Image (tube, rainbow, N blue to C red):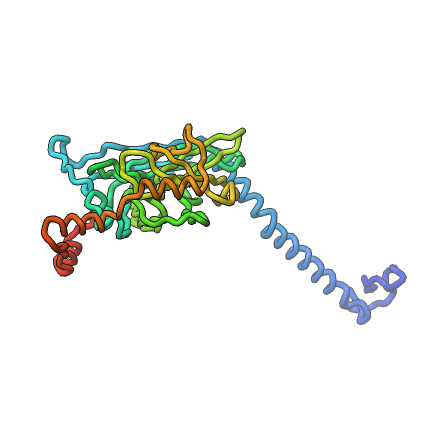
Amino acid sequence: MRCFGITKAKQRCKNTGKFPYCSKHWWQPLSGLVLVVSVIGFWAGFFQDLIKPLKEWSERVAEFKKPLAVEIKSNRRTVPEWLQDPDPTKGEPDIVTILSDRRPMKTLEIFHSAKDQRFRDYPPTAPLTDFRIPTSAEYEVVDLDGDDIPEVVVTFSNQIYSLHYDKLVSVLILNPRGELLTKTPYPTKIEGLEVVSLTPYSAFQTTGVMYDAISNTSETITFANGFHVADRNGQRVLQFSWVIDNAGYVGPHLHQVQEMVMRDGRLEPLSEKPALYISEDWNEPWSGQTQVNIEAAKLFLKEHNLPPFSEMRKEAEKSFFGTPIRPDPAVQETLRNKAVQRP
């Protein structure tokens, strides 16, 4: 049998033998086999590393662009209206359901709680520290980053109606599959402006716990006092505001406003420094108002700030009883242990 090997002159070998390849060219079929295996491995890796992710990304984008809807079930009751318990800690939160192409993707039933001492010292907001407070929900479906894929922006408000309607809100931004992209940012202090004391309803640098009764999961969140999505020449701007004074509830307040934009699933500040406004509007303090500088903000705090509520209470107790009444720590601990956190 004539050898099938190829010589250096690129001609067929003239050697003969019992096997298809002679002793000089036996390595050639092995080299061809190694080449075939290498080519297969290269294309398999190319598909795995590039083609397959592109295909999955294309399928994911196509799924995100399916018809999107959001449903909210509110005014939920477990007993007839005339038997409804007025205790805000025993209410039922709104249920938010995200549907893609009429298929439920995510359902949320959110409760809030916060552990800030400022809330604990003020009776109307004290339930925030020991109970899971049900929430009401509002939503907006909007393309925040201009990628033709809509986001679901859900704003949750605590259902506390004591002396005033509670102004603490938390914001969740989800994709069409109901996956959490981002939430309320944590506000930073403005250099040169000292925040000495805060009203009990201020959400400035206040964190809490968000409990989802559907998935039985908890997550740390940040509160804000106001939130709005604005449209500026086609760009979506998310405006978050926080009250940073200790003025009386009725009347103007000093608001710190941070404007953010959505990029790559994250919130980024639109400007380096937050803006300051003086307004009576808790929800959109920038509406119809002119931005103030730090000097004007300092003057407002000096003229309008009240003593902290805890100090006012001590002074009142001293005026009536001579010495402040100190609550028994053991009694307080017993009451906290008896507080039933109802999901």
